[in-house]
Image: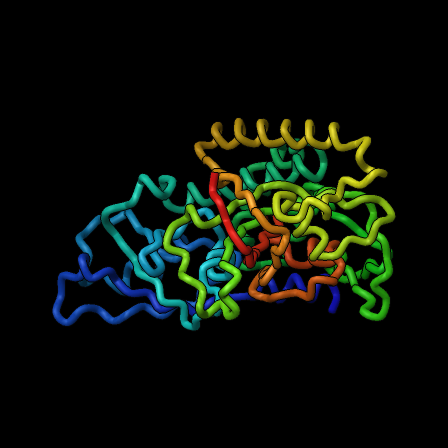
Length: 364
């Protein structure tokens, strides 16, 4: 499958939702039936308001602006793409995905304020700036976008129009990484074609923006169906850190994920003898990036997810039980460069959901 074909599948991805109005907000007899909606994977739940509100209009007071969702009692973060929420919270995919909608009582102590589409758009643009800084060392191209291009780019995301998105985003010059087993095609979007018979290619240097969402299950859980549900965001470790692809080194998806979890897999750090000389510089650059991004986020009124507390494992027997990206569970040995180019979100981040099987977990 070419890179372009994979990206089209990603952009066409959708999740069937069955949305129930919370019982405390039902004011009619009988209560309204659930709303059935096909939600884009790359979209955000509050953007469904225009489809949901008319369905429950008979029981809503006039002028309702607030909308938020929960799954099994857990308020859902609006700034996390819908597909990522589904991959993260449904260890065994649930179709349709049963969600509860609220139009009152916004949980401001748990969720960041959301003022509709404007908040979501600013969050998206801010993520794009952050990705540009990681890839190119600056975000000037994003900052200098014309208003017309910014509107067209955002509309392409809302409408799921990959062709328009590629045309506009190409001006930002956000190339991720390339590799020797990837061949550039002449099709729209400069799709990359993977030679499935030869995975011995070597990556060219580059930095890949990553958002990693990690949850853990105990060693006695063999089937994820038996794992306890995620009922609080404190159970999710959120890692916002790039993966550094080194020149001439073939990096697999498994290698990349382990490199982001040094507390669990210290021996799999990408900083080997050859790259250790650059480690200090990279750490300093990453720290600068984080500080600049935090400042940038503050300027646009958006605060990204906070990292969770550190985890210490008393045993080396840690297993990656699940890696899920865009609703699929890729083979661990797949070239990471292909994954990064094919499965990234429109904000140029690769969102990865990981489940770890650990022997004993201590939260500090």
